[in-house]
Length: 96
Image (cartoon, rainbow, N blue to C red; front, side, top):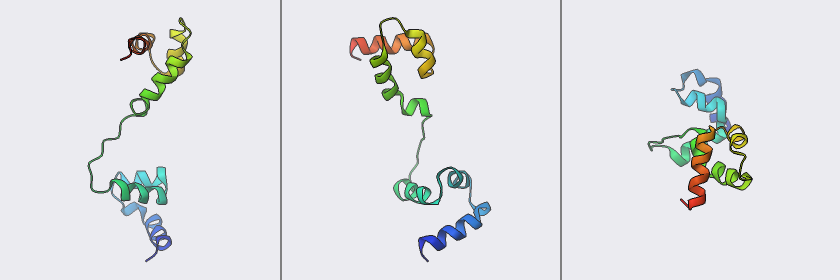
């Protein structure tokens, strides 16, 4: 059986897929789901929330955009409260 045949069968019988595979198929599509399975299949996988997964990138960009007084604006832009922005930027300043 080739990939095209398998995809046709799976997509026509997707109600037979276990959760969360059915949801992943909807979100990712067949080809990406197969690549994901080939990479991570058989392992226990923790998927962090988006903000945690990309936090280091967001923090670096926040530090780049910091003007010395725009804590509140950065908080709104990046989805953090002002206190968290101050904490992040304080760590960056100390090199932590």
